[in-house]
Length: 101
Image 1: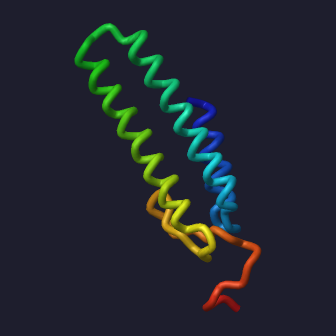
Image 2: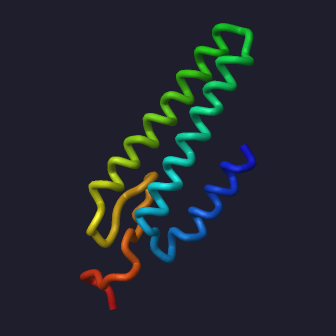
């Protein structure tokens, strides 16, 4: 889980300057891989069925949410800003956007 914190801090530091869509997609895919690895770990190591099911459903929900954010990012290509993870972010820092001075 230490790697997840590093990924999130890197993403947060770049959000205000604009977020390259390719970097955002790579971040989302990386988080999905970490979540799937955690799911495999939970299924293989947790002995109590109830705990295993609850944690598995939680991780499957996280992967599903990340997949939806990835789809939203695809829809935002070519636009100046996008709503990603509940925040409005600028997705193309190199271009002029209306309303900018």
